[in-house]
Image (cartoon, rainbow, N blue to C red; front, side, top):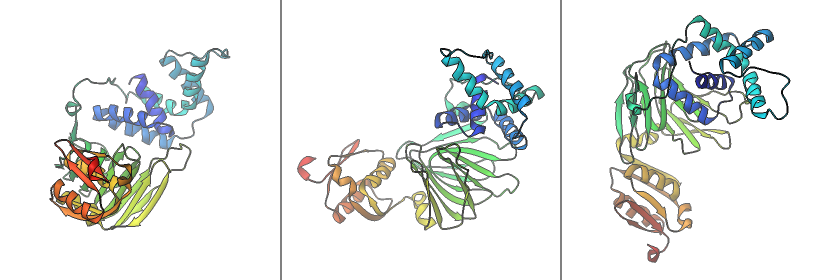
Length: 347
């Protein structure tokens, strides 16, 4: 196991990993399912040994620093800032590093991982499905679960589910029908949270470039676990039942649970677009993803127009025609763009 992975594991288990750290760690785990299974063992170990004694921690810290060719030489001089920073960092995660070293010494971690240069879809044991704008797809997983993947979305999943869990990674929107298996929870990792289920159907909207995560339930029960920006904030779990939705506003660290119609949340799987009192800017995001045309607002004021409409398998031209009749604005559709303005002369 290489040094970079050791540090990432330590930061993740301590709750101090950044978004970039999580993505880097997910790459290692996605690249090697065997390593992912071993990482689960490490998680279980740490949960059972979360209060190691100080002597054990200090000894393990020294071993880790030696492994990284960073021997402790205290007291450090003031101008040794880089070394001081690294040693402080490792001391902070020493207890977790200790757990890593125990497993290392037991021979559980026996391989070294390196970033591969091949296309992501070729990584051993894992499949990656990525839809471009304007493209949707349906996927059946190894356990019989079905996934409807929306446009401009990506899912990473193993060719087969090993270990005690079924874990995948999602960036974008997807509707899931998860095959029931009480002994093997189904876990979906998002940039800003995690969803855990046993067997149910539900919709997730979690684009990495959006600051709101939404999960709504059609059948069964879903557990949503938000990822907070503040590492010392206690972890919460929100349980959802059918026709309820959780909205996690990441920047504000705010959770909102509201009633919903699950059939509306999954309407996109049937070629429907439903806009309920939405501003035109948010509508434009969905139109851009569904039709693959870049939306440009010539007038900023048009972004705040509130519109309502329901469409099924309609063309972009039809949708814009009817929306423009409920609120006065003008548009122009080109090969690559959709232009929106408040005055026709600006197009």
